[in-house]
Image 1 (tube, rainbow over the protein chains, first blue to last red):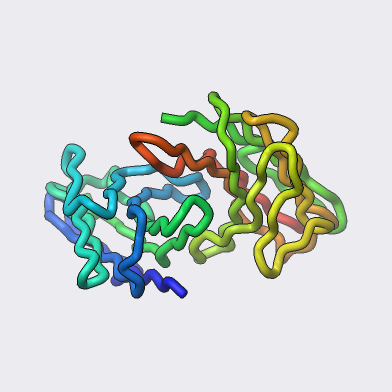
Image 2: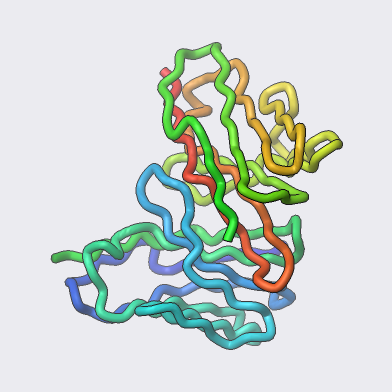
Length: 111
Length: 115
């Protein structure tokens, strides 16, 4: 069974710092991987999606990478802002109905 | 991108009552998913709702407790029945858009508190 782990569970950084969030998975047979942001008490907002054939995707200050051989994905956030404070979740799709979520990293950016 | 309207956004309910959550999608989708997120936890899939057939429930979830309707390709409801404080969670609907930009989209969530 696919297991998805996100470390650290919580992270606090000063404003302006660059940071990396990690997502590890045990089965490399994935279809795609998606990073989400979740604000407290709210739904999930899709940030980036990487197909299994891709190595990375970029959107603004965000860059997500995928290394299937090592079972890792990273989400890089450049020049962090207080508005980036949220919980970040990675989710792996192994098929239309097989979705595995990571445990999440709660990010706090301190002004 | 798919736009999903989910309501209510939050509710406070009494033990033993039921709450129905609605999700409306701006385009036709084959599958809709219902998730629960308990405090401090990641998401857990409750069931998959296909139009015209019974919903498929995951282990630990049963139809009597979480009846689901899927009357057409743009709408679904999840009812949390006979609620107890343990049902206090965020409930989220989701759709899986296939094609060129295959992606999951989520509703804004329903934060449920049961007293």
